[in-house]
Amino acid sequence: MIAISFRHQSDAVFVHTRLNQKLSGKGLLKSVSAAIEKTCIIVIKTTPLIYKRQVLPCLAKALTECVLEKYEMNWYEQMIEHQFYFKEKEEQREIISLAMAISARERPDIPETAKIPAGKDLLFNAFYAFLKEECSFSFDSLIRFRLKDYFLTLKELVGIAIDEYKLEQEYQNFIDHLRHSVQKRHPVKVEINLLYDKYFLFYDEHFRLLGNNYLKSFIDEEIRHFNGFEIDPCVLGPLIGLAPRRICVYTNEIDLGLLQTIQNVFQERVEIRKKVDFYNIRTLG
Image 1 (spheres, rainbow, N blue to C red):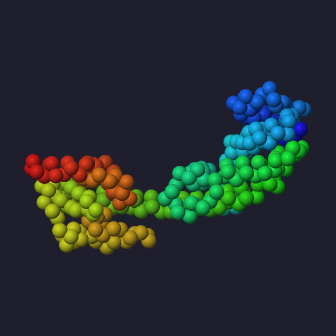
Image 2 (image 1 turned 60 degrees about the vertical axis):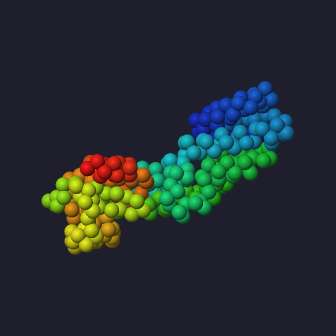
Image 3 (image 1 turned 120 degrees about the vertical axis):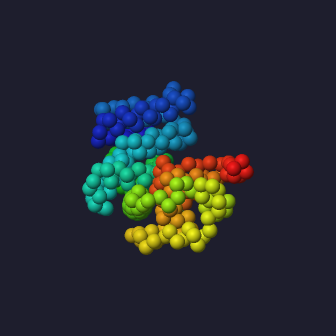
């Protein structure tokens, strides 16, 4: 027999419901008795063999889901506010969103996160290891004393998320500055056609190639550097200096980082087309 006591009845109900759902999916409801007693205690009765082979993984998953769905968000908020001193709710939400995306392996662009274990795996393994032998225990004590690795990982995730949040804020300030710089400039060219084929080539509205010396002549001191960011002198710098009303980019590679920056700065001025369109239009012209 195993007995789990909870401080909150809602936790007992949550775990009991999730456990029964998992047991039902395995056709074990007739072989296992899982009942709530005295409102806050779950009592599980079955044979030792069925418990170890069938019930144990289901119970560990149910407890893991309870932590993830009912507690993790609040722990993130408390950690961000009281250990990292971010008080604004909007900032907290953005940092939590980043931390959870990193934990879910949704941000492969952040290299230092590759070796961080997933939070749900740490929780499941901790619960599974503790519950291997049938016993009676307190859910809250288990959280307090057996989840050290999980909480250390949460703190590491928050630290990485905060660094990424600061970088994204700096990048957004950089983009806003460039937008303002473009908006206040008089267009040197009404239209620029950009062809990407391993590198970018500039063409004017008549599809005449523009040389590098000509392009670089439009890069002034304001464009060269901004708040620690070095502006690309071969593509982004000339585009800002030319400040065209329309930019047609011909490429088959839409995931280019520089292309995304161009779109962020010039917004509705940018149109993306296939590379073959460039040759078709140029031939017809």
